[in-house]
Amino acid sequence: MKKIGFALFLFALPAACRRDPVVARVGGLEITESEFRLKLADVAPDYQNYVLTPNGRRQFLDVLIREKLILAAAQDSGIQREPAFRAQWEKLKAEEEHKLSQGREYLTIQMWRVELRNRGILKVTDKEVAEQYARYPREVHVSHILFATAEDAEAALRKLRGGASFATLAKDSLDAETALDGGRMKPALHGEIIPELEDVVFKGRVGELVGPIRSKFGYHLLKKEAERPTKLEEVRERIRLTLEKQKLDQYLQTLQPRFPVEVVDVQFK
Image (cartoon, rainbow, N blue to C red):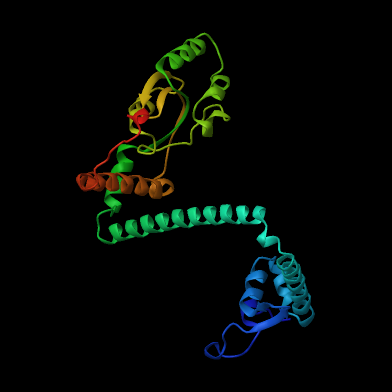
């Protein structure tokens, strides 16, 4: 059988003459053509091909009819008037509104960044990428342990110098992302590590244990595990993203006077 796009097989009416035709009714509920297509898009591709056949189409419709029958019966039961349902419904609406708000913020930021690129503010040239690569052609592999206080970091450093396992002590790190992996951070190029750690990481010797080093996150103990040379083609996009971030940070500094920052909660001051 020749395969065709499943979104086209249901009706041959011109789009201009079609307003989401009803495929079936279950009591007062309807199954429309668009709902059929959306449900079908969620199933495996092989089954989608089967639904292109008359038998498959009817079998899949029977599945949707059963779902509508369950919904119709549940609605008729009056469950939606129960306090427990209303409480869960309000919670669900609040969660969805929060997700929608986050999505709106994300979309706003992404489209603004595209606009900045189009205006040339975030433009990164091939020359800039090549120059950055020439300065920093190596990738480093680093492990770290993050502590809340310098005293905690100093105590851990004494244990390490006394022969304690770095990976074992890293289990208590405040950096949950690396704690369970012996403190190992992702391999990094210059610009991919927070500035407070960068000089130590890139200038230090492999195997060297350094710290405590203070950053905005806390106090770090660092161990440089390895470093390797890179090829420009394999890191070109990472370098471009790093340089773009730097340009964005510089641009944000020019905007800062327009958006004064006030930390209200005293525990964060």
